[in-house]
Length: 113
Length: 115
Image 1 (cartoon, rainbow over the protein chains, first blue to last red):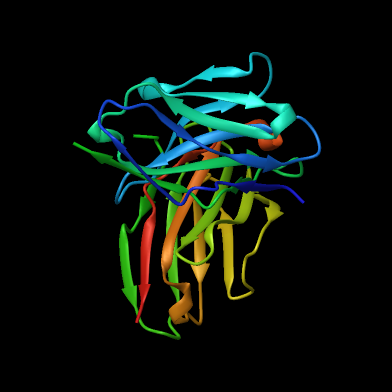
Image 2 (spheres, rainbow over the protein chains, first blue to last red):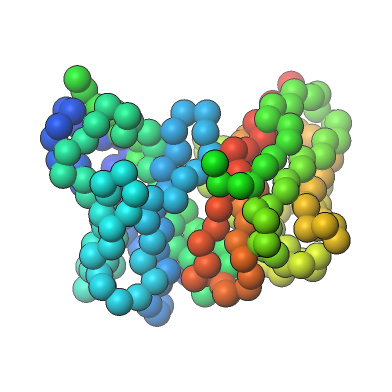
């Protein structure tokens, strides 16, 4: 069965520090992968997506993610975190049957001044 | 702003009641998805409609039902509500039926509180 695991429930980083949020997926073929961000009281905003091609994808707000098939991972990175990045981040895989998204449990990011 | 609208933003009701959540997809999108976000279950897919027809079902309770109307807006009906139905309900839309490869755009959600 398809699944997504985000091992870190909560991460705290200092403003200006680099960030990496981990995501591992279980999928039989080439997956469609997404990262969404949810700010408090807000809906889900798409940060970036991977469908095929270049394994390093760029997204909005300075985020990037790298697809590594050998590790079944799709980690999200940002070189320098801003206080406004504090939010919850969700990794998701697009199901092969139908269009549903399967989400990880989310990683809550706190940013220290 | 994703272009997906949901009403109401907040809903407080009592156990045993029935409520209807409404979603208007982005202009031109034919697929609508409903998701439930709760503390214990996380984000779970409920159901998908495409151009008025049900296309996929997830972990949707029998007490819940949905439909998509000719103008493509969708409604999620929750009946015989229980305390455990308290959650944030999201609607998302996408252009068509390209399966998992389509980007879904999410609305702001409806927060349901069952007392």
